[in-house]
Length: 316
Image (cartoon, rainbow, N blue to C red; front, side):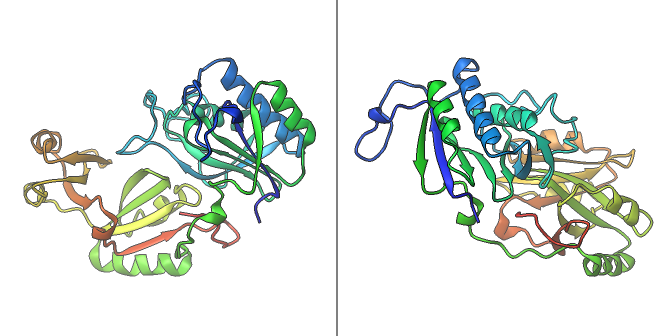
């Protein structure tokens, strides 16, 4: 159940809204990287303290992908530099962070640097950052002192029924668990095909690829990110020219290839970049082109990693 007391926190004075609730004032819909942004963070901290929360869980983490959804430059790190290592270890669904780290995540979201996630403490406390500097804070208690503190900071806390970013409002998706039965199926297919391609979605809009063999399956499995989305594809094709020849005349594809050193890389390319792509993968061992559109993607298997207790909690 979502928290019972939800407030929309903004820098937009309610008196400057029209009859439809649209803001008509002069405040810009971007962060000032200064005192107003700091006020947002202080207000959230006040609500967290009032709710008795000192740690928050990261849910549905995302970074900017092929289509960058932030309005400010991500500087190549999605706004996560200094919070997590370059490979984003520790930034995954279900990871717990302290309130100070959570506030830095909020800062990156306010700046639209490419990172987005829900921040939750069970049914006790939630923080959702929306478009245009709208923040929704939910608590299991009224938090009158936090409301007063938010007003002192020059922001406007408005009681709402529910956050529009509440997970409960989204349509549930059926997802298979990557349990022992899943891995047994993968092993069976692998024994016949000798090699497969594993796409590891460790956060939304970001993935790593692994070329699976009977010999490395267990090692790859051990290194997968918690709650990752696993998609199994047929093996890469050693005929690079044949793969390049099948690229669509228009549109984009995700091109995956194995370099001579054994590493697997991937890039999104459209029809204007094929010549450059051919040069890039000229000495690759093997490659494949994966479709970008969901209705065109037909993997062999797709499942999400359950937690160590066997329960599937991720919401891909």
